[in-house]
Image (cartoon, rainbow, N blue to C red):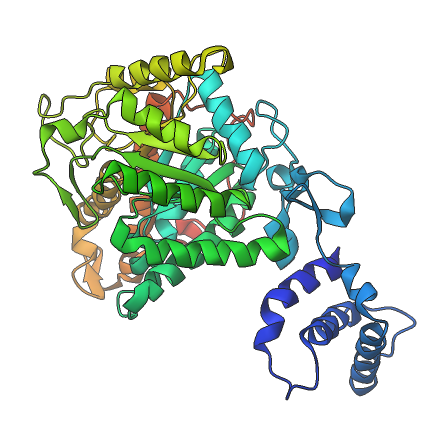
Length: 497
């Protein structure tokens, strides 16, 4: 398994290493695999550094000259589009895949192949393809929706993972184009959306590395993508296609394409093209029908016509009829009065019954082919921040399996920082000198980890409310999260938070 992990990493990075054109990519990878192998002590291998390097080089040359078959023994096996290690395991062995790649410890919940209360295909870490579909279907069948949180930093991602584990539940972590650009760094040029592409890919690898360690299932998603932003999604799909070649699954779990401002015919035709491309590797498409009001991430829909905030059953059926023959891997963000942002009570008029009318209309059209639950469509709830609990629960009953959360977690993150500053204000004005004495240092207070951790704690608390509102608690069957060990406290020089 060590050689397999090293080979997979080399397959992705080996082509970047130039050795004067003498070695092929395959040989370079075999060389690095041999290097890793030679690090381990063994009585048959020389201990002198120079002789050991000669041994390594010779081993790589022999392996390369053995031909294509030798290297292919390490290549991923593909069965029905699923990644299979060793050619004989099921796709549930994707559990711990990132830890294997990087040779990270993967113990306890990270090492689980499945969860006590979820379908067998659902494993710790990022889920894609059929495992993701099984998870979403489980949500619909069991009356809960999964919170989908927009993240702009590794700190925000970590707060989401912590909240999911504390609530014993899956979570959806998603990036907007603006959030992706910020993740890459605002100083990085974003011509042709290259910063947004790089930022989202970087965030994806962060999520993949740590989701397994937290031991919970994560759907890795990207949020609103208008027509002008399609080059951003194209770059991410290309990244997933490259990732699929070596891992048997896409880098991301799903992408949203929001063409709700375009004519419905154009919206559907473009979504059909993207779904055909994405479904080949198990990527889910979320499409939007009707417009979500308000403002988010630079998209301002505060002045749209009222009728555009409510989708019609006939339109939803038109989408279902067009996409279903291609793949069942799609969800619909239908508009039922949703508005981004938080507004005073009474200013947002949600009509969740639009969703059940659409389900009934489509089921009638399907006749005997309609599902038993009469909910052929999986819906997404946008603009969920500040919504009444009764509206949220009603929408879940009509087939909502995902609710977006952004505004409320933006506030909770800021609230944590604001509260920290208020609590330790007198320790945050100078580097030296505080109420305890003029010569007392304040480093442990202005350390950025301090206020960031306070922000994470507040965000975890706010997300607990979201998990509760969405009936999404105690879903995995893991029980309570164990207390972290080997964490320094204030008495040992750690942080006071």
